[in-house]
Length: 206
Ligand code: NAD
Ligand code: ZN
Image (tube, rainbow, N blue to C red; front, side):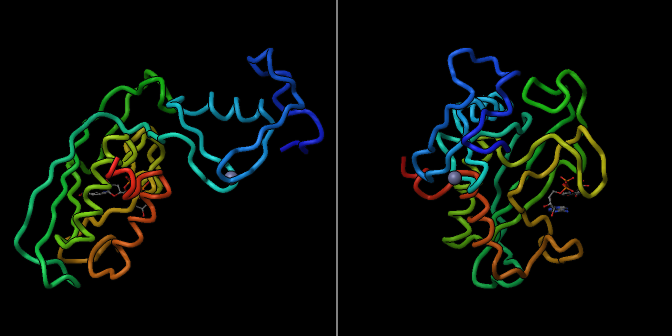
């Protein structure tokens, strides 16, 4: 948070001897400027996957991956429609994650984590936009972006598996939690949330 005309706040603590504490760099796509030592610190405090996200505007450089623990994603089709999508069947996603021990990329490496409410069941309409959302979710799963380990905002529990900024519909025929149907904006919203993690239609054609 230092001004760019003074030295980076990381000048004392940095591991790098080669970068001057006053050196600044400009991110190519969005044009935001930071101290080079600050960018290095930002990279090293993340999961060091070769990607960097601009802290000002969230533009992603490289391919962002997450820290989702191991598990499986299964997909089924249900002939019955969802409320609000009477003209098609339903895609049923089942996420299974078991409790385990945190890795170096997690908040408390070596400490156990809990996994509540698994398997978690999620639903999409089986129309063209729903099938696009499914393909994007599969890619987000492969990049470990669907869940993370942290503090559950619902239960307050720490060191537990939680949803990671990509909303899912976990109710099929009721909407008691607010995470159900009908929701006419859901597919557009989840596609936007996936794009914010770097997962978009262009990635599917690569
Ligand atoms: P959290 O409470 O930290 O919230 C993270 C995000 O998940 C938030 O954006 C929130 O809006 C969303 N979210 C909260 N409850 C949700 C739900 N029921 N369905 C879909 N999205 C939801 O996340 P968390 O701790 O992973 O999940 C919240 C709670 O919901 C947990 O207690 C979990 O056990 C429970 N849950 C249960 C089931 C089930 O099938 N029994 C499925 C999903 C979630
Ligand atoms: Zn930016």
